[in-house]
Image (cartoon, rainbow, N blue to C red):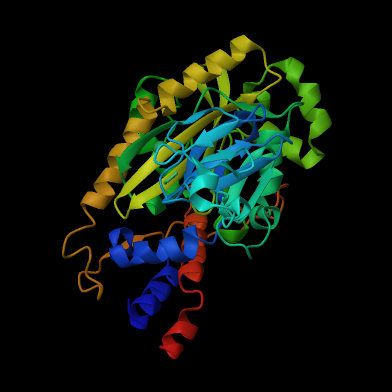
Length: 445
Ligand code: FES
Ligand SMILES: [Fe+2]
């Protein structure tokens, strides 16, 4: 890519557009891998998925297979899931519990600390010359967690996870830290592959309640959601640091459709104990929280079911890019540990029916994400000179909206969720990251 390409993107982003060519461009995609996915905090899993020592799950950080394990001391460790002998993928299971992991190729084995503990016929072949301690699994340079959410970072020098999450922590505390005992993941994450670009899927959750009334029209027709075309606009869209964002969607009255998202009343004293006054205020306004942590973690805390019979669920999802036009979607259902079993089951069923791999609302979104990439791969859409005015539109609220200084939570809160403020902020941060050190490189080469 030439410097003029970057400058053009910069100019268009500042004007509330995005050149359409960047959506599916292979060079942009490679830069994203290098400048974004290798440098930012990526979600790996939730602590409840690793209950005992020896528990493990296998995950991905963009293209790197990761083995996430709990060691004997109860610490969570993340390793490149690759045998140090010849690089074979060590563990192919999604989850399980093992004291040792043995490579299927030549039989080297590793303990839960990632240490190489066994070499087949070791002494006879390698003699004393090889120091096993140098051949342990490669660790993910940084692993940190917040409210049970475990993240990894390939950049040893990255800022801390807490600093990176910044203002988002306040909202995570409401969703994840409201009840005693925290949250737990139900079952295992579902995952599937969709034709989509990761930026568009992230945006859809983090920044786009505007699509709800049209894309999810079938939910309105089934009387699962209100007929009011503005129903997903009520509340605030909040721009947070580092490209993160959240929509605090309320009912038309500015309050939650049901107090504390319809959670059972005997849970309320717990919320009131664990959250601050301002957090409780936001929690009692919200019908749905929907947002995300840049680059590719999104969440939705909503209520499924029919009126009078609604159950809250919290889902986290990772959009793992498999190319500029393909995404592997991972979705975790989470629920408060302290809730009764029956509530948890109903919440899970509601989640599966709406946002599981075969969920009705999921199908609606997937169709549009595929259509974006389908229509962005031709000569006109990919023209870098923008001869065909091939920019896409993020002008909602561009120059006609002031933040609401009365909003009780951190971040810059706009008084509606039908605005593109978070999307524009994501584009700016995205560009800042992909252009980082670019001038130095351009001068130096
Ligand atoms: S590649 Fe794993 S033991 Fe040889
Ligand atoms: Fe949607």
